[in-house]
Amino acid sequence: MSMLNVEGINVYYGAIHAVKDISFHVDEGEIVTLIGANGAGKSTILKTVSGLLHSRTGSITFLDHGIAGVPAHKIVYQGLAQVPEGRQVFLQMTVEENLEMGAFTRPNSEVSGGIARVYEQFPRLKERRRQVAGTLSGGEQQMLAMGRALMSKPRLMMLDEPSMGLAPILVEQIFDIIKALNQDGTTILLVEQNARMALSIAHRGYVLETGHIVTTGTGAELLADESVKRAYLGG
Amino acid sequence: MSFLNHLINGISLGSVYAIIALGYTMVYGIAKMLNFAHGDVIMVGAYVCFFASSSFGLPPILGVILAMVVCTVLGVVIERLAYKPLRQATSLAVLITAIGMSYFLQNAAQLLWTSNPKIFPTFFSFGGQTGVSLFDGGLNISYAALVTIIVCIVIMVALTLFTSKTKMGKAMRACSEDKAAAQLMGINVNTTISMTFAIGSCLAAVAGVLLCSAYPTLQPTTGSMPGIKAFTAAVFGGIGSIPGALVGGLLLGIIEILAKAYISTQLSDAIVFAVLIIVLLVKPAGLLGKMIREKV
Image (tube, rainbow over all chains, first blue to last red):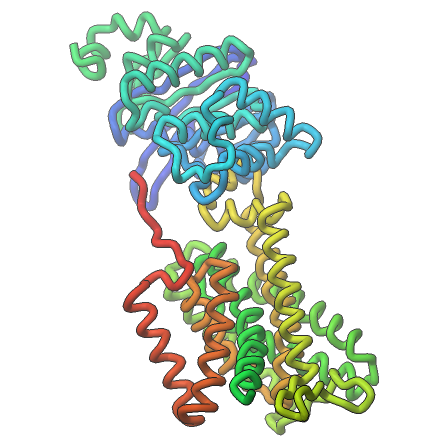
């Protein structure tokens, strides 16, 4: 049984059919990536899994629990965290307060230990712990968004475009961190426009086009696939 | 010396505005709506306290507590019935609903308690005195004014601690900044909005009692003008900001009383709003308000 099983979901924005009968799964310990052009429906899928949007059909199962239709704030308690697109850190709150909010679902006794672990992983955040998040650089905000998601001790972490707007050197750093998190036992579902980076660390990937899954395979297979190369890897 | 008298009266009136403005500003911060029925919750609070003490003979402190409980429940019920179904609606629809709710409360009060003014009892008198007189009567400070100022300070300190130190307070700030991200943290946005209405309405009850202690005529429209003034104070200080509500409230109260004393009683309201317009021309987000920058 997969950790996350998505079966035949259809998501609409008003009259726009953004996600069309999509099915995919993520096994425990994997890094799975959804790649595709802007508007292919990648973010919509993540938001539907995390409960911010709802599918009209199909089912979403996480750790054997049906979570389709469950409100987002309850899904977090089951061990599923999302690092949203554009980071969405709380800009007027300090770095440390952001991390505390990440631990909202955890008992108070775990908060300081969790913060210490995040600072170990992201020493830069420790230096800036008393600063409000709005004063951080884009890369630091991305680290904060990831650290905040980690605070809930997720079994599955979903990342929405973590490389967006970052300098290439930072993108490498962020992907190294994602790989390290995975090696520490966190399962990863990654949405990316930077297909080459995403496929290079992913165990498996799904290629989306206008709301449909068109191809699937291992990271290496997709990197070598001629049509994927032509459409997403600039070659 | 008379200037000092006016100043103290201004600070006292401003403290009431500040307490009411908190309700506007907190609700705006989190639900992004202007709850125009807030002023009328004040009126309900004052009536509850009035009847508790004059009809049932309860001691003032119990009357105040009862008013706080009734208004807290009223605020939460108003949100559930009138505003929550409109969470996805346009802001104009919510605004009109709030104005409708305001009229509903005023008319319900008129039906229940008639429009004949009630004279609010004097709570703050000690040993037959309603205030202290200093410098051979040169400076008169009423106990009501003193209590109002102290209560305002206590509320401000308590709220600041609540929003900066407690988990629920921080969750409230998180919600007011980004509801989707707050949900992804596990914060129940609906509960948080209810809690904000509860706090604001509870404070409205306190404001109602303090207001009627200083200006003892109580009728169904009692809350509407102070409500509008406090809304002005919230905008003045920067809507959404808690310290802004304090600064805006105090300034508004002081300007109003000084304008009444030295310029013209009739023109005092006009002067207050003229100052508001000037402040907004110079600082569109209010004195302590933050301009929202869109980050891409």
